[in-house]
Image 1 (spheres, rainbow, N blue to C red):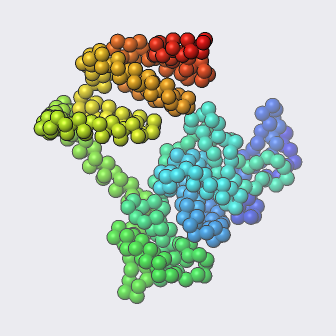
Image 2 (image 1 turned 180 degrees about the vertical axis):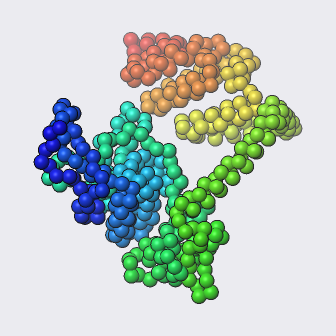
Image 3 (image 1 turned 45 degrees about the vertical axis):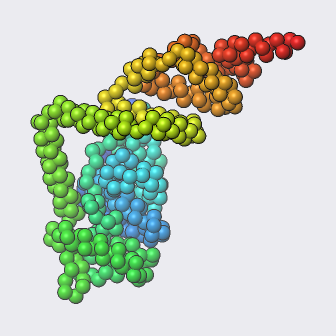
Length: 446
């Protein structure tokens, strides 16, 4: 095998080139007898050294951002470094969907902004590893972002095409204030009893590394420490100094305790679900339907007990309030009423058919004519809005078009949308008001 004169490429850790204990040959794929050179193969302890240096850079970076943004930055940064520590690698995938679970930050835009802040000062955010067509691909983060000496070859593994399952972050504690995770990390970092002020500085919740703790911040810090003490993670001695307990000697113990709590709650929830399923869904649905029928009977009895003039007055008042609503408001009211009927077991399409069948033909024709005149007087944009709302409502609930004694309104609605105003008005008058259209035609010809 021919070996080039290139020397072994070292690891770049904490600003220095460190000679590796092991090295792997880089073989020319077109000529397997040609060894391009030997490149460092970082072991776990070398990766841990790089992670420790990155943690120091993260702390220095956190002091440069405002306190309001520091919380999210530290959560994302420590979550990424914790994943590197678990895998023993200086390069890990950073999918936003997993960081939501690891950090407790629900807004992906906030996580994305923190990754951009970490890109450069902490490491390198590799975007070329993300392929939109690959559902399992994601950005990756590597520390440090330095190329190997003497060439353009990066000392990095090939791009990954996987996103590992989300792990429990060592800084996320259920039911604790957001600042609690930083205070617990500071207590572990202190290694012994410290006061509230020093603990707040180590947690980087103060404005600066030498700033004090005001009354408002002091109350928040003490509230978080009390929450941690209730979970057995920190303890306060007689002198008012706080320190981490044996239970939280490592972040792994905190993560395991959090995982056990989730597992216990999951067992309780699953047991409750099993009990509910064992009783049978049919019995529950039958009881629900019976309760809905009783409520409907009670409402009908109340309505029937009202005087006739009172019922008419209430109908007119409700119709006036409904007419005063916007198109979107009327659509929302109709949707709410239909969903209420569906909850009671009534089919909206069947109910509409029964209502149509119960209409008096003469009265229905009169109402249709009034509605046609009202619709023709609307502005064109409003006509389009009403037509779209009606069509959407019918399509959603399967309600047929048309009224008794008249043609289908579907053709009219379809012509309302695409045509110009003049053509639309002419067709509308011809379809709905033939006598008025003939009169207008005679007047125009005269």
